[in-house]
Image (cartoon, rainbow, N blue to C red; front, side, top):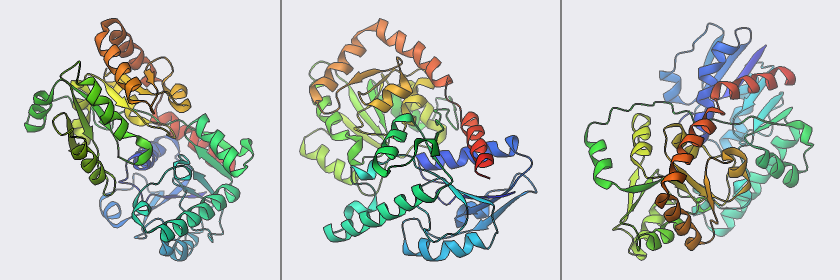
Length: 370
């Protein structure tokens, strides 16, 4: 069978990790089927196909564009695929072939995200209508929908009236792509200089609720000489966040690092007092599992998906209340017994999630759909 995988989002954060896991584990798990990878120019030129049964096609078409809707059906159809996997909901609605789609979350149904957020109100409304048309079509026409948590599955069923039996949950993992622990060099000196700090890892989209985390830090600072280090970047919301930091005179204790190489992220977790995530909504949540995997305590929002994924291995707070966030952080850091328990439970919890298992379950969906 010829199975296509749309790998154009290879370098994105969460979706990219998901796509890269397919690339790394499918050669080991499936030696029978042919795989055709559709890749952007950079990955097309640098990625080696691990098997003679694997083929790559250069596909320089941006997602969420008119070109995606017009050009991709021809590019995909030319390969005469038996099944095509869209690891992200954005797909060409006129593609006639059989496919499965991964819907990571429905955050866009609730919050503004990405470049569309910077558009004028009318263009934003048009973009959102287009989003719903594409997502609705993907959900209705896909042979199987993959998603990352039971909570995300409930959202999809509720919003798009999909039969639950059509949706398969395949959890992601917090296993780091590079767990280097060579604590040397200028970046590691920076980590030591910033101590003690709590850490946030991710973008600054509205649902991430980083503003409330910063407001909570103002209260935490009344009791502790602690910094908040923000690791991550995006072209649209981090600049606004910098303005928020300036407005609230928080620059003394909030440090924006930007993107961090995979080779260094384990060290940022290692030196942190705790990872704190104040999201109002997520489809899964990889950074807290990453933190747990290297012994960093985790303090997160009291939302259903986080209870589902982290269970007893995290401390929970009300993300809408900076006072409660501050209280959860200070009480946790003041209690050595709690910290020790979080580290021990965190190691155990992180072990429950494995990218190889994710890909095995995805391969089972391919076979069922074929």
